[in-house]
Amino acid sequence: MEKITQRELLPGIHLCCVQTERFRTGTFSVRFLRPLRQEDAAKNAMLMNVLARGCRAWPDMRRLQAACQEAYGAVVGPELRQYGEVLAMGFSAAFPDDPWLPAGSRNLERVIRLVSDLCLDPDTRGGLLRNDYVLSERQNLRDRILAEVNDKRTYARIRARALMCAEEDYGVYPLGSPEEAEKITHLILTRYDQSVLAASPVRVFCCSSAPFEQVRDAVLDAFLTLPGGGERRMPETEIVDSAAVLRSVTEYTEAEQGNLVLGCRLGGYIAPQEQPILEVFNRYFGASHTSRLFRTVREQRSLCYSISSGYDRHKAVFSVSAGIAFDKRDEVMEAVLEELDRCRVGDLDPGDLESACRGAASVWRMTGDSGSALDGFYLGQELLGSSARPEELAALALEVNPEDVVRMAQRVQPELDYFLRGPEKEAET
Image (tube, rainbow, N blue to C red; front, side, top):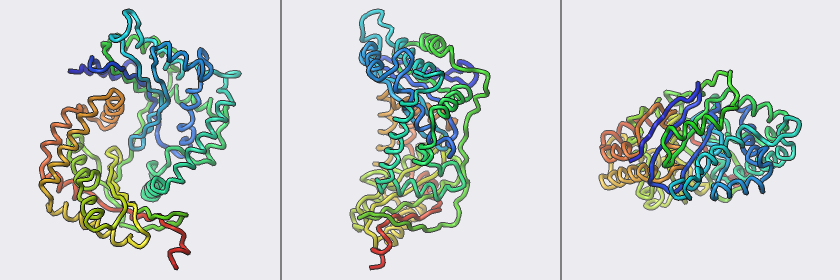
């Protein structure tokens, strides 16, 4: 059984420690929490990648890789995760845990020091981040943004979100734009890095065999030079309680297949006790091969090439995405709304509902089988204001009943019907 300890080490700096001997590989991460804003999106996407190129002790990728090998093959890399309108940017590390290494190895402390060096002691020139690293990562970011835009299914989801949440920070694309990336210089990014270190709430996570006290002392020692004095104010996510009038938007691109996205609101804050219900509803409605959308819209009626549903519990939004032929938009939308209405009135298939409950429980059980998954899970739980553990949510998922699913379905409020399709001239012929 894991021992989970969560403490505030310093104002705005929290440590979540999962002590367990289940894994041979430990997990350690440091994340700086930032609000999702248009003016900072590209900088957020670039910063940790620049810092990952090297620090003063190991100023390039070759020497950094050598340091990882000294830590018995540890793997350290930058990460950017999104929770509603909150971005968690930082570094995560996977490393061989001390019980499986020669006596006295203290690999945990070595990895924590390596991560702190990347965060706090970058390789600089005249006090500024290296211009060659910034230029290289700027190009990498531009390429990454363009690659996602060229993936029409991904682009449709990006556009639907931007249109539905145009007046909210949630509509901002987390990677920014190529134009914004092009404006970032090593001076701009250095100043932004300093503000991130000084004013961002910090969340530290460790899953290993080490007790809380050992992790705490190692973190405090390694991050002693973290700038202080600023207020580390927690960013928040704005939740819209009700949907606007359902509207339809069509955009055209070079594509051989149409991509349809139905964006919905969930009628306000998702309470911690509603998490299992939302997951079960999602799996029953469209997130699995036994879901109603897959069985009816795709398999029985052959109206689409692919279809699935998903949600962001932090923002309380729900969506359905489908790959369809250009002339199937109205039929698919009608079929999706028809299945939603069936859920709302309690016309549920008992076998599919049971499968959804088991699938949701399985997802949370598997979360407990990975240090990396636990890392993201506990940060997400904190941001939701929930203390529930994976095994508790798994047990609750098995208890979800038809009435729970009906109530969740009734919360789904469609707001945007977005369709990305082939060129307009093809539509007219």
